[in-house]
Each structure stands twice: as structure tokens, then as C-alpha cells.
Amino acid sequence: MKRFLQILEQTAKVVLVTAVVLWLCDWAVFRVRLARGTAFDSVQVEEYLSTALKGNKQEYDYMGVVQVSCARALFPHGGAPACWWLSRHTTQWE
Image (cartoon, rainbow, N blue to C red; front, side, top):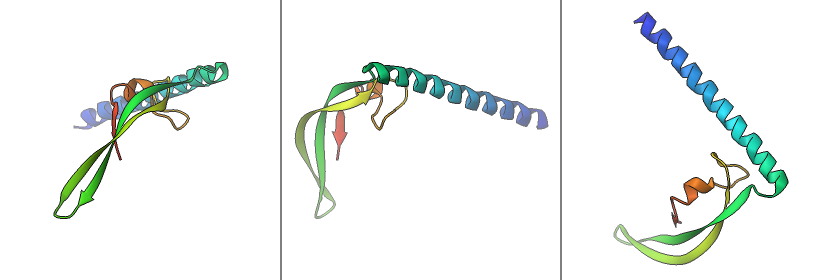
């Protein structure tokens, strides 16, 4: 059991270090793109509004299509979601 916990601990450390290094590299590439003016893009998103009604009912209203700014990176940066994620989730609910 002790050996299993040691292996689990080492695996967790490797995963954590890998995630931190990946995020730092992504941030550095994002900063270079930001300096060049190519860090952000936009994606068309359909917006819907969900309104609660009496009797546990919901009303859904189509709000239209809007352009949403996104970061061209693996992770969200600059307060904008990542473009790869936003292009796969083009429906947003408010």
C-alpha cells in the first residue's frame, strides 16, 4: 500500500508540473501574439435568454447572433475564452 501511495504522489507531482509548464508556455506565446496584435479573434455566438416563470416553467428567448472576442491560445487569457473552446460551444445562455 505504501508503494502505491508513493507512485500516486509522484504521478500527481508530474501532472502538476506538466500543467504549470504548459500554462506558462501558452501564456508566453499569448504575450508574443499580444505584442504583434494577433492574440485575439472573434467567433459568432447565438445567445438565448432563459426566464423563470410561475409553476417551475421556463421561457426561452432567442437574443440573436453576436461576435464574441476570444483568445488564440490553449487556455483563457485576458478575460476572454479560448477560441478553440468557443468555436465548439457557439450557443450561450443567460
